[in-house]
Each structure stands twice: as structure tokens, then as C-alpha cells.
Amino acid sequence: MQQNAASGAGSAVVSLREVHKSFGPLKVLDGVTFDVARGEVLTIIGRSGSGKSTALRCIDRFETIDAGQIEVCGHKVHDPGLDLRALRQDVGIVFQSYNLFPHLTIEENIVLAPSSVKRIPKAQARKEARAVLAQVGLEDKLHHYPEQLSGGQQQRAAIARSLAMRPKVMLFDEVTSALDPELTGEVLKVIEALAQDGMTMVMVTHEMGFARSIADRVVFMHRGKVHESGTATILTAPTTPELAQFIGTGL
Amino acid sequence: MRINLDFGAILERWPAFLSGAILTLELAVIATVFGTVIGVLGAIARRSDNPVATRVAALYVETIRNTPLLVQIFLVYFGLASLGVKFPAFTVAAAALTINVGAYTTEIIRAGFDAVPKGQLEAAEGLALSRWQIYWHVVMLPAIEKVYPALTSQFVLLMLASSVTSQISAEELTAVANYIQSDTYRAFETYILVAIAYVVLSLVMRAGFWALGLALFPRRRRLGTPL
Ligand SMILES: Nc1ncnc2c1ncn2[C@@H]1O[C@H](COP(=O)(O)OP(=O)(O)OP(=O)(O)O)[C@@H](O)[C@H]1O
Ligand SMILES: [Mg+2]
Image (cartoon, rainbow over all chains, first blue to last red; front, side, top):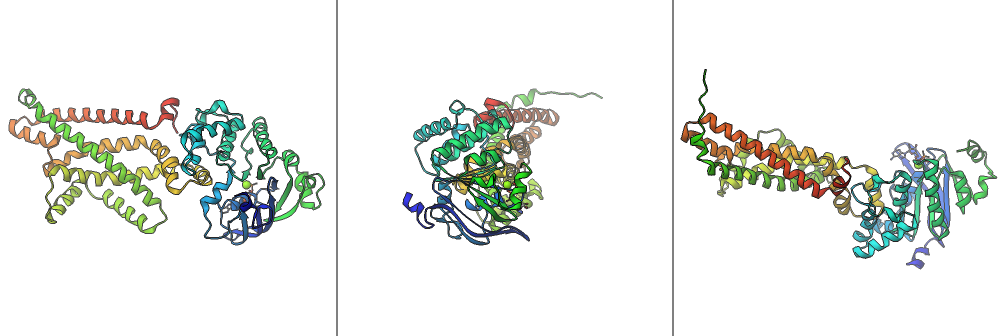
């Protein structure tokens, strides 16, 4: 499995090649290319409407692309014959709105996919639910319902739910944007710990400080293109005026 | 003007009333169970990408919603008769009521399905759940919980409407009443009693739905908050 995942695009777990995507007349992705290596943390930054979420959603085939290639853990995502559910077992995605299932307890939320998709026995799935909840610091919330949790706790539970599928890569789309600064910190800490464990991650974020501290590489998107990319140093020493201006606005 | 009421002769017939009431309740339960099944399937069909399924479901719903129940009952009754098959009146009544309430249930459950936030569906897709697993685990219960009061009302209404099946001689409560009043010449008293019996049946059904709700929606039971 591991070798298999690495094959195809060298050592890249995620690779986008000249990806184009329009919504009607609106060109949202205009030849986007980037790679994410195993264990790497890539952050995508950019102005509102620059195509960050769209790029991320294309990786998990929530959007289909018009042209180009996307390869994720050996899955050819651009291929119409893609095994969608196999792709999504390898990719975890967490959204800004946590989207926990409100009628299920946190434990049930987490156990659902491993037991019904991977057919893991319930008892074992529950044990693993406890483990991933411990990972995000919520062991005591096992039997709570989502509405009984704070926003930050719900987002951590959503991350735990994704982790329970043992994904090879995690995608985060502005997972702290709906949270107070205080709650943001607790979610970022969880993501930081994941990075230290070697999880491959792609995250869209507005948290520049966080991007600087966690990102192995940064992609700055502007008008549907990767306008500038490099290590986190580009955030302190940008080479394009657009990135300089973007950082300058303090966003 | 004086109203002279005498319930004596009617109350003597209580076993007939009771069996009529039980039959009415049986009709209601059958139509509720199968109507719910039809409603869920109909709602899935209406929301599917398959244009044939969508249109068949829409045609069904619109046909039923725009014709009187009594006519539907006659259509089933004489339709089956013209095919040369003879079913007991009870079976015909149960079938017609099920077909009728299934259409209304389709619309109610569809509204419930539509009320499940799109983000939850995406989260479920992102977890690699299949389309049917998503319906079963993520959509179904919250959708039904959201429209549960509307469903309850619809099924209680259906139980009341089942009185028109007396027209094809299903031996339900109203048919029993018709028979007793013509026998005793105490029409007003008979229908007062029947009205009370229907109120009791409505209350029984509402209590049943309430109890079922407790079993179906553990979150609601524990937290008491709406979804
Ligand atoms: N499903 C869609 N249909 C039509 N237009 C869309 C759709 N999704 C996104 N867009 C448009 O595509 C453009 C890029 O959207 P996208 O969500 O990728 O931006 P973003 O960089 O994530 O912005 P933000 O920082 O505000 O989240 C926007 O103009 C948006 O309105
Ligand atoms: Mg976005």
C-alpha cells in the first residue's frame, strides 16, 4: 500500500498538474500545479475568491476539473473511472463548518465510517474512536452529542472522525475560521501535533502565524494561479508584490 | 325545542363499536407503516438523478393530491374487480389508504431530506460512505425527526379519513355506526358516540407516535432540543 501510494508521481502523495476549472464563465483555477510529498505540510494562502477551497476540493473530487491531472495516493483523480470511495478512504477532509452528524453521539460519529465502510467490528471501532478522541483531547466527550460541545471541541471531534479512517493525507479548509481566537488555539494545537506525527497535510488557512510555524511549503494563490510558492520564508520575504501586499494587509 | 337523547339501545351494541374501532386502528397502522415505506422510497425517487424515477414519483404524488380519497378508493375497488380478482373490503381499503397517504408522506419526507444541511452530506461523502449508507445513517433519522410532527398529523388525518372506506363496506367504525343507526333509529346518539370514539383513537395514535419518537430519537430524548 505504502509503495503503491508513492508510485506514479515520484514521492508525491498529492500532485496537481496544470489544473483548470471554471464555474460557468468564471475561471477559478487557471493552470494550478503543485506537489505535496509524504509527511509534508503544505499551506495554501490567498485572497478570498482566489480559488483555494476549489483547489482543495478538487483533490478529494468534490469538484471535477476541466483540464489537467491530479494524482492522490496513486489515484488518478481526473480519470472519470476513478474509484471515488477508494480515494476518499485515503483522504481525510475537514471543513470550516464541522458538519458532525447531530443525531449521533461523538462516538457514533467516529465509529460510523470505519464500521460501515471498512467493516471494522464495532468493538474495535469503538476502541479506536477512544484513541483518536484522546489524540484531540476529547476522551471525556465520547457520549456527548455535538450540540453539547463548543465550536472548537466540535472541530476537534470532526478531525478525530476523519483520523479514524486512517487517511494517508488530510485536507483542512479554514478549519478555524468559524472560531474565537481562544478556540482557534486548541484546534491548531491538534493540527500541529498531527504534523509532528508525520501526517501529510494540505491546509487552506488565514492564520499567517500558524502557517509560518507549521508549513514546510506555502502556496500563494492569486487569480486562480499559484502566484508564488516556497518554504515558509516567503511569508517573511515575499518576492512578488501581490504576496507582499497580501501579507501587508495583515490577513 | 327539546332534544331527547337515549343512548341505551346504542350502548348495548358496544362490542360492535369496539370491533369497528379496532378495525379503524388496524387500517391506520397498516397505512402508516406501508405509507412510510412508500414515502421514503418516493422521496428518494423524487430526489434521484434518474429522470424516470423523478417523473414517476411526481406523477404519483400529483395524481393522489389532486383527486378525492373516495374516488381513489373506488378506483382501487373497481379496478381490482375488473381484473377479476376479489379481495376482502378490508384489504382494498388498506391498499387505497396506503396509496393515498404514501403520496403525502413522500412530500413530507422529501422536505425532511432537503432540510439536512449539504455540509453534512459532503462530510459523509468525504468519509467514503456510499450513497445508500448516507441515506441510511446520515439523512434518514434527522430528516424524519424534523418532519415528525407533520407526519404524525398526516397519519392521524388519514385515520379520520378512513371513515370513507365505509362506502365499500369495510367494517370500520363509521360503517358500524351506519348500520347501528339504521337499526336503532338513534342516528344522532350514534354519531355522538362515534365522534367520541374517533377522538379517543386520535389520542391513542398521538400517544403511540410520541412513544415511538422517544425510541427513534435518543438525542431528543436526552437533550429535549429540536434538531
Ligand atoms: N459551486 C460553485 N459555483 C459557482 N461558483 C463557485 C462555486 N464555488 C466557488 N465559486 C466561485 O469560485 C471562486 C473561487 O472560490 P473559492 O471558494 O475557491 O475561493 P477561496 O479562495 O476559497 O475564497 P475564501 O477565502 O473566501 O474561502 C469564487 O468567486 C466563488 O464565488
Ligand atoms: Mg474558501
